[in-house]
Image 1 (cartoon, rainbow, N blue to C red):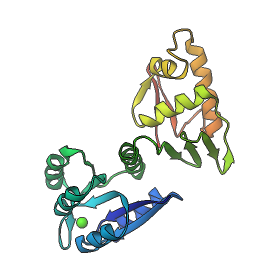
Image 2: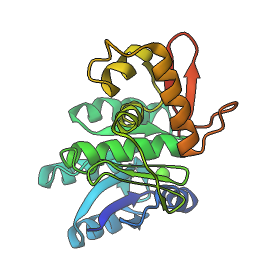
Image 3: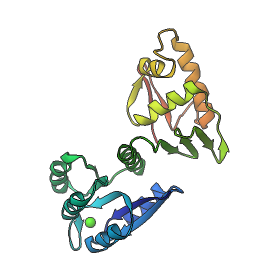
Image 4: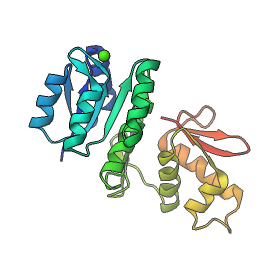
Length: 224
Ligand code: CA
């Protein structure tokens, strides 16, 4: 089933860039440059997520947000351009909507979009992507570069925890506990060895990892 994502943004280059960087086979994008186009697209298609600029040629994104909120629980992620917009949106978004400040890193945007979709769809979406790796924890299907990727149950749990907390340091204790049922009987070297194997499986460079980074004395952090 397609997941319809509406991008309401009058900066055409940014809108394209966002769509390209989020692209996944199951996503369909509706790019709208005005509130009028967005209202029409929203009325005609079952939209699963809205990325919403604030300053638009025919009005404010906040107006559209209010209208959509009155009719739907669709997740709305604001794209704010400056501090003034940020303040306005931050107050407004307290009701559950999310926001990200321009210029944003596209990897950060992707994580926010995936989180919002997961939250909205009750965790069933359990799909993750980084580099050429795809992980579907719902169906237990994993691939790298289009080929099946074999992950043991403890490796799956380690990756899932790190991915759910992308950008944060996850402690060694938390990782041991999640991967090995409490982790009390698992020594630290087992975790180190498991992380080394995981890096090799996802194709990360052990000397200069792009995704799975060691935070010395603390744990690991997933980037990407
Ligand atoms: Ca704008």
